[in-house]
Length: 232
Image (cartoon, rainbow, N blue to C red; front, side, top):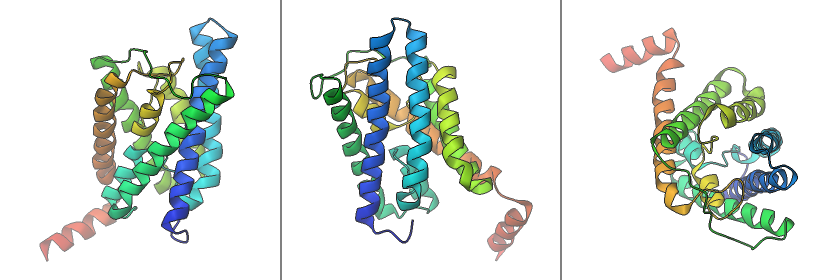
């Protein structure tokens, strides 16, 4: 990633987030048009999302890190893997890309370019689910990078595929994607008024995962070195 300048990294982030959102929204529209069975529609939505994540992280990861998610960019900035001065640019690129993805999905299915969602997603259970979903996502990324970096695209995709089904919120786990999904009144939408609760839960889950895994991933040698340095 260090060999690519900021402009290229931002384009990769915008493009990746756009393609991710276009897949989430587009597959939701397609699934809902093919079946009235909500469970079957969710399954179609899930499989498409998991598949595109493998592709996007594999092909764009070497350029930008393939965050496609302000919560992920935040924890990389906090841990020093992303320059803090670049964080705001990453977030703006992700949000812009997400909106572009919703627009693309709508145009493909001959829907209004943008349309505020009326789908209710709120309440303690939904917020807690988003905290858990984002905690797990960040944990998978941090541990995956540490132990099996080449497997990260599959690890993230498989985790999100599972989290679609074990969380009450269907695992948005991404503030930029959540915002983009508030602009579609289709299967995958969320009311704009419900966004703040999701955003707060997602950021809290991401930070909690960073704090825990910063400690959990320390080896005995690292802990000993840090203790020695603290005594100097």
